[in-house]
Amino acid sequence: MLLRGAWLCLSVTRLSACRMELRGKVCILRSVVSSDVGTILLWENDPALAQYSDPHPPYSREQIEEFIACQQYGLQANGQLRLMIEVGGRTVGAVDLFDYDGTTAEVGVLVYDHADRKQGYATDALQTVIGWAKALGITSLQATIDSENIASRRLFSRLGFVNVDNNRYLCNMKRIVAPSILSADFGNLERDTLMLNRSAAEWVHVDVMDGDFVPNISFGFPVLKAVTKVSTKVIDTHLMISNPLRYVEKFAKAGSHYVTFHYEATNDIDACIDAIHAAGAKAGISIKPATDARVLQPWIEKLDMILVMSVEPGFGGQSFMPESLDKVRILKDMITAEGSQCLIEIDGGISAANAGEVFRAGVDVVVAGSAVFGAADPETEIVKILNA
Ligand code: DX5
Ligand code: ZN
Image 1 (cartoon, rainbow, N blue to C red):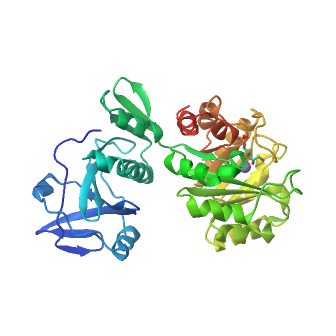
Image 2 (cartoon, rainbow, N blue to C red):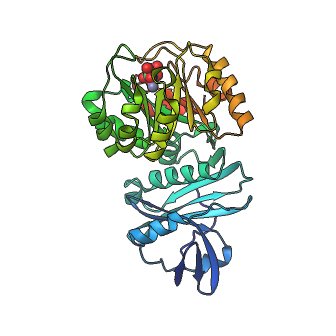
Image 3 (cartoon, rainbow, N blue to C red):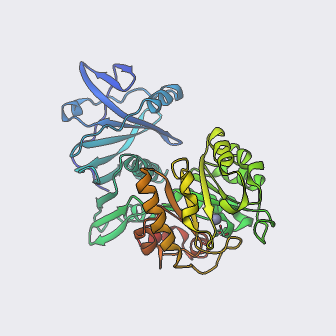
């Protein structure tokens, strides 16, 4: 891990909203992220502040919530940001995000001593700064990691970076992988969910099947609640059930960030979308292979996501249907024409072998069940899919 120059340790004299008075000098607080290992602060890096050395007091939960509520990402390009890793008021390290032009940036992580490194602080900090860089619209993160720094190489590789030449690592930020727990080991669901927490996957795909809309029955609310209790990821619930209007609100309130129902399963699409939004979740609609993409035109501007099935819904482990990509391209044009931010997700038969072509066709999120959970090393498989 690298860090250029001395890291910042700022003392705070007065806090208000996003601006801080630091011994007479105003510093814009960009964001504060609290994690289970401590408070992580993002500051606009100003060399003039570097001389401050005494750490500020640990923040209360309310102060962190206030910071996060008013956080802003108004960073200028070619800036530099330094992230301090605070654990109970003790600074254990820092992360640098620097030399960026709005779409690419360098990142470096340093946790000072071995004992703290073993606590996972660097993992937490790097995951935080990756999420933060995404929020900034940065699409490519790079890092220089010396060859003898094995621990760092392992950390960056686990979180989505690939070694592009001897010391250079690259992470493609626009892509999202959503492993489907339908293929997880249900005798060890907590273990598999914790593995996903450590992984470069940003979402967890939860396949609910009722045995009526599809010829299979998977699981329902108890499993969803068990997963959401442990998971730190976006919960992406895929409802393969008849008459979904009966349940969309309940799935949203049970912890789903996205609730996706099937176009073929309901006569009241607007009511389903509105109920999901009213319950505070994002609304997705899914179409089977035989359904034409153009039927979704009336709802493009209301939807948060469209899920293109690249297999017949009902089972994991099926073969990818390449004609699905024609549908993706049609949808991409429809979404662009509408000026919508609607995401496109694809689901079924995805692996590192076809993910590159799928992402290039315009997909934002790929679901992968058997490719991930059937792999000897699921975390590495996720990184391969991300960088395919
Ligand atoms: C199928 C499900 C998919 C499936 C994906 O009906 O909606 O999410 O679990 O599994 P793989 O990736 O193995 O095709
Ligand atoms: Zn699915």
